[in-house]
Length: 120
Image (cartoon, rainbow, N blue to C red; front, side, top):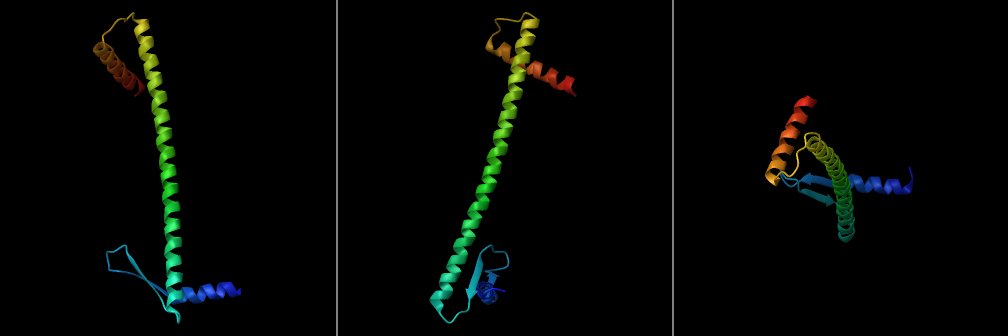
């Protein structure tokens, strides 16, 4: 074992981690060392590194969530495009033109219901 690893192991064995109370997510860190300021610096660096890792983890989760949402939006957009094309083709096939907005919406809803029923 290298000298560096021995030093790390010695500090690791002297660091105590405990929960503040039974249901708490807050931890109490202690390090016994002859030089108090050195122990504080080491504990502060541990907390700093922990926070950096936590931020990296959250960024990874956020990126994956963003990618998932973008994929779903793209899929929904493609499906809506197909539905709009089908409604347009339906109108052309049956000579339906000049409908009011309410009529067009009702036709689209009806068409979507028919598409779902025929797909199952």
